[in-house]
Image 1: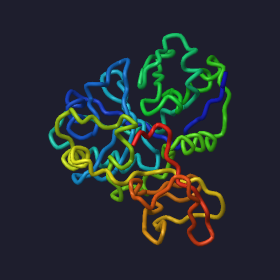
Image 2: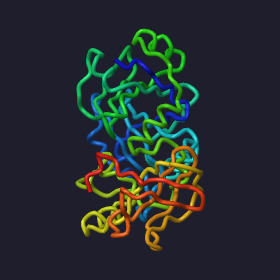
Image 3: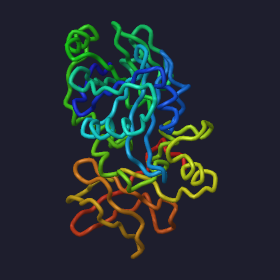
Image 4: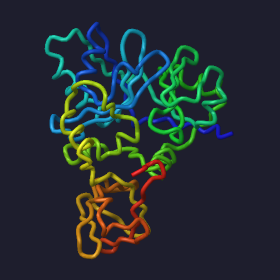
Length: 295
């Protein structure tokens, strides 16, 4: 069994509490807050009114409120964004990033823990702290959200051995899920183009939320012609905003560069081929369509 654990110190925890907290979030996020219970958590996004990407996060019930597990580099701006929507809502928003930490471990290890169930987003308490089977994909494993002071004792009791965070990022990228640098996507891509339907971040049956109209229109009119796809580098380095061509036709653009690159690709274009090796300047690469992506 894989007993590795990744301390995701690039993640942050916000806490939303108050009598209006559920309704407050229900009116904002792309998923349905009614799915979230003591035993079920979900993945969701916050979009612009036009349906463009702003933030993504995992939401889980905690005491009388909700934990939001988000990228640490975006936590402060997400905190401010949520506060800007408060108006008269009876809601308190706290940034608990200095108190709580997120740790990730394997799907197999999750199933070995007493109380677990093989359901995406399934949540249960281990020594009073929530463990979640990642609601996006089982291959992303499970997440423990825990007070920093209790972390290492719990890891010891679970017989988990620390592994480098870069190996978690690599696993995400290989699976086709963005691991970090979400700020590079802000306002550049529609939420639905981030594969959020397949990653269980959108509920098309819920009522209105910010960006719902355009998201539903793209879905219902079958106008999803672009998707965010991982790039497998063969040689060289790619740069943000570089364009990708096939047969002299533009088929995409690099949105996230660095070690774990992603591009927005016209995946239905007749000039796109998943088997082709592409080239930009001195860099060569392949565009990967993840196995969980059905279209």
